[in-house]
Image (cartoon, rainbow over the protein chains, first blue to last red):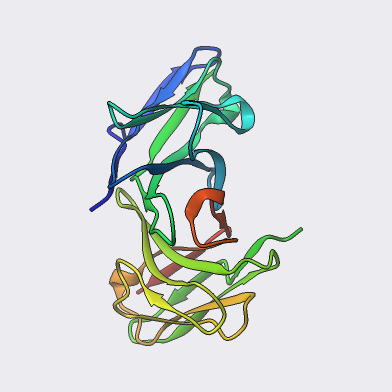
Amino acid sequence: AQSVAQPEDQVNVAEGNPLTVKCTYSVSGNPYLFWYVQYPNRGLQFLLKYITGDNLVKGSYGFEAEFNKSQTSFHLKKPSALVSDSALYFCAVSPSGGYQKVTFGTGTKLQVIP
Amino acid sequence: NAGVTQTPKFRVLKTGQSMTLLCAQDMNHEYMYWYRQDPGMGLRLIHYSVGEGTTAKGEVPDGYNVSRLKKQNFLLGLESAAPSQTSVYFCASSPGPTARNGYTFGSGTRLTVV
């Protein structure tokens, strides 16, 4: 069965510092990988995805993520954190091809401290 | 450019009452999904639909029913609400059979069963 692990319930980072939100996954075959962001009392918003190709993918709001097949990881990164980045971040995975169920992680709360 | 609209946004039910949550999308997406979000558990798929007139069970379907009579609408019903169904419910849609395009989420329905 496919799974996603987000090992940190919360990540605290000072404004202006780089941030990393960790995600590891388990899936049969090639994965599709996603990051979503959820602001308070809002739905999830798509941030970025890895489908194939370049292991470093860039997304909205200056975020990027690196796909590492050998470590089965897809960590979310940003060079310089903003207070407005404070939110709940979800990693998600599905196998590629056909209709495939998407599995979401449990979420990591990012707190950017002014 | 409404995207995915969920109604109502909030609801309090007594145990044993019934209700229907409505999800409407204006993007002509084929696939629609109902998730529930609980603290520490991420998002869990309740039911989904791969097109008008079709429905299928997800991870946690018990106690819920769904219908997709029109392509743009996906209804989630609770026939006899239980306190365990207290949760935040999200509807999502996607254009095609794979997850590669990501999902568009509604803003959620916060349901409390007392």
